[in-house]
Image (cartoon, rainbow, N blue to C red; front, side, top):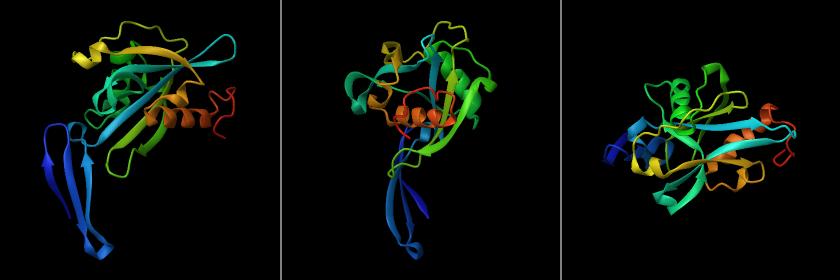
Length: 184
């Protein structure tokens, strides 16, 4: 049995009890704003010198502190449609319009054991895509954010673990196989 202990429009705290399976009060968070489903996008481009650059967010995430930090493009999955949401978020936050076939499905993952959030992870090669203006969602924090091109050495240093997860999975596809073998 799962019961809600507390909630607002963004977050719920829930508790699971199933004594027959040894669960006597497991408390976890649930991202109510998106029904526990978030997408992560890692845009990249192939450079003329046989290297790859990655396009990451530089934004304030208040629970991590009030200094801008490098993180992934993320968004709550809308209408249970991760692909369409990914296309929307990529254009909103990075200015790139893409089609569903441009998105590279890198699977799903959970973030931490204290949350039921499922992350849908995508890569996207923006090398030949035209870049327009990133419009943002109108929030003050997003208006203060920016996008930065980084090299492969900077990607694992991002404080956002979803950046590293997307990078590792993208590397496993072989699409960026000419990069140094950092995680194999």
